[in-house]
Length: 267
Ligand code: DGL
Image (tube, rainbow, N blue to C red; front, side):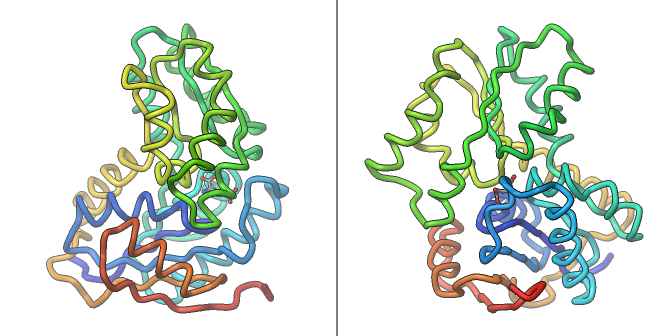
């Protein structure tokens, strides 16, 4: 048993998709979240730079005493998961393995879409891992940085969102996929407009869901699950705390979200 908090890190609002799942599955756990909104998006930056930034966020939360960290960012997972795991002796999870596993189990026609940041797409980590499990799967992939920008500007629905979703996803829809990996943690915040555009026959795969389940399994195995909440969840942002509180309370359906502004890496 361990009542210390769990740390979630992302370039900005994307990790809130995992925060929601964490609060659903593990309601007794306390959450410390770090959204590096001031330096988002990460997906267009060099992976070596993303690695440095992810380590800065993790260092901060480890200093705050978290018992485990989820890198709630696909780009961050590609860039920094291996070096974080080598560096620290607490459970540290990324989002990609959970996404790969869920995606392979979901597709029936073996035509799969993948949307992610440029960094994640260029790394080719998803196709490599998926094809290692099932070489017959064909993956139609597309970098969609504009969808990250939408979420970072607080727009989760409306006419502009619908039309941008349609223009970004059109080639993947045309390819006849039966499943679509939301390979950037910002995208589950747009799952309603994405599902509406792709149609109900296409299954959306949110890697965060399996990731939080895996976190729960690891904490249980290590006897680190909380027995009671340690205090309030706390959300740190390097960006605008009011904008963060607005979007987080809307997405998490909470009246009050405690947000603290923080300067990181000289940002
Ligand atoms: N949410 C992140 C991801 O899953 C990064 C988005 C961005 O900052 O570009 O890749």
